[in-house]
Image 1 (cartoon, rainbow, N blue to C red):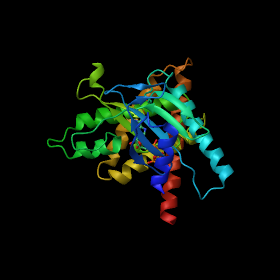
Image 2 (cartoon, helix red, strand yellow):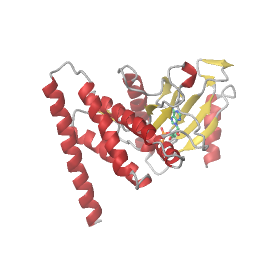
Image 3 (cartoon, rainbow, N blue to C red):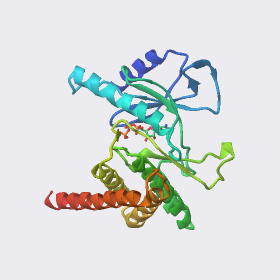
Image 4 (cartoon, rainbow, N blue to C red):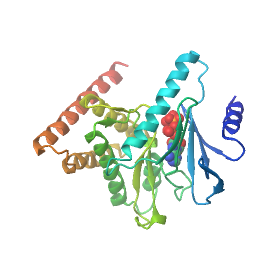
Length: 274
Ligand SMILES: Nc1ncnc2c1ncn2[C@@H]1O[C@H](COP(=O)(O)OP(=O)(O)OP(=O)(O)O)[C@@H](O)[C@H]1O
C-alpha cells in the first residue's frame, strides 16, 4: 500500500526529482529532496526542500476526500504565504503548491540534534533534559521564544488548529551567521487546519492543545515549561503594536487568557467524567 503511494509520488515528480521519505503522519507523507521544482537540473548540495503529499483516504467518499485534500493543501499554502509577510513570524518558505493533487513544496527547516533526533520542540526538550549539567536558561529561552511566536500569530488573528510540540521546529541557522551555535529560532509548521479567527475561544483552544501536548510528553516539568511558554506569549501581545491603544491590546490578551482557563476547566471536567 505505502509502496504504491510512494511509486505514485515518484511518477508524479519524474525521475529528475529524487525523494526520500522522512515522515508518515496521520495526514500526509513528507519527503525530502535537494532539487528545486523550477530548476530541476541544478542540485544544490546544501539546499533541502520538503514535499508534503496528502494521499487519498480510501475510507472517505472520493469526492469529499478530494475536496478536503484540496482545501487543506490550499489552506496550508495560503497560510505559509500570508504568515511569511508578518514581521516576527517564522514559517518555512513556500516554494510551490498543487492543491488539486495534494502536494505542497516548502523549504526545510530544523536539523539533527546531537542525540540523533530531529529538532522539533518535543525532541529538543527531551534532549536538553538529559544533558548534564542541566541548563535551565537554554530551555527558558527556547520556550519563551516559542510562546512569542504563538503570541504574534494570535495577535494577528490567525490560529494554528493543531498546535503540538511536533509542529514546532527549531532551526539553528548558523550558516547565515545570524545565530550563535546556542540560539534556536522556532518555526511553526503544519497549517492544514489553520484559519483566520478573532475568537478568544479558538486561541484558547490552541494554547490548551499545546499545554496538553507538553503535559503528555514532559509531565515532570510541564508546569514550568507551560509557564515559560505563556511568558513569551504575553510578551508578544504586550510588545506588538496593533495600531490601537494599549488598553485594547491588553483587553484582547485578557480575553484569550480567560477563555484559555475556561477551556482548561472544560477539559478537566471531561477527563474526570471520562
Ligand atoms: N518545512 C519542514 N521542514 C522540516 N521538516 C518538516 C517540514 N514540514 C514537515 N516536516 C517534518 O514532517 C513531519 C510531518 O509533517 P506535518 O506535521 O506537516 O504532517 P502531518 O501529516 O500533519 O503529520 P502529523 O500527523 O504527525 O501532524 C514533521 O513533524 C516534521 O518532522
